[in-house]
Image (tube, rainbow over all chains, first blue to last red; front, side, top):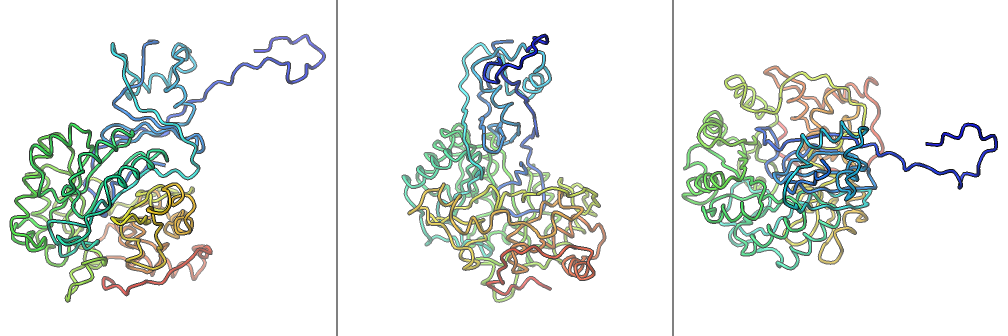
Length: 51
Length: 454
């Protein structure tokens, strides 16, 4: 964090020490593989339904 | 806590181009995270684990068993790709050769049909798929278990960090083969039974004893711990057996199943007297089954749903979005029944002369049909539930790749006994301006006039 609030002159951007950006981990979907009994095309793979 | 490491029960793939990470269980289940989450999971720097900001994510990752605390070093497969159009599933028809000659086979498999291409070709294809970030690699036929190199191919798929499954008629599965497949890491088997009475099934399959052999094979696969799903292709001749078929699958074999129907492709077109059920007939059959056994299908049908469809909805099977079918002769197709056999519009990419990446990302056919979907999905209240249904069925019946799959429309929207012709209803609403005009997408007339329209 840059706590130097007294500085009046803005430092050139390339001299400002940046903390590495925090990761923003997101879990979009957790699935199980339980096969379901469905109406669907048997020639095709199971409906993976994952985007 | 810092000893937490990736579980080898999963494969991990990070696609930086789409900001999606996939955690794929060895049984085929796919969980999706973003690339930041995948970076944390797969980083050798474990200091983030003690950062309270990541506490909730860490908790979920431990709960899902992606991270485990084990005394032994674990080897997990981790892949990173940068693919804007991500080919997530490949289904390869390794032969057309089959010990059976089924009356409804969409691909005309038979004891005299093609044995498929070489082991080298197949293994190269598997390696190319892995490089593209494919998660699932399904083997189909013909009858794949009649290929001498079938175990070698399963081993290669697993070794490349993908999840294998096999579509087989199960008639040649022995205890030894089932155990060997399990040991190699086969995740699932799809097979089929077309009647409860062995005589009718055998007649369909063109082989006496086929029913008993298939049932024995299914039991061996289950005993070895391989999940099996059974498809029943309903038609005019076995429809009366449906309740008994379901009872047998549920209570005797204890397997999940798919209720499908004979389609107008391959040998399904060759009958003098059509055996395919119309949408109407199939729907009424399902309705009568559901009245008797409301639990006959675990995925909801005939329920009124009210989901707002406000986003791009990809077909659940991945057709045109993240799935490719490869034929026995090395030609790539959009799906098993959207090939050159169905229409000249589906010109195939020949993988004997071009790479899988080239075919998937640049071939005109894949580019043309990328994003193929029911024309109404984005404005339909049940779009998220049916995900557009089956594009191939829509094409085979209506002659348009973006037509509604009317049976799926009806299954999602109609809980009554009478079949509703939704395509006519959509047309009426389009005329009066309640639905938007059709987008300007390529259209193809039906290559074959089909019989299932009642």
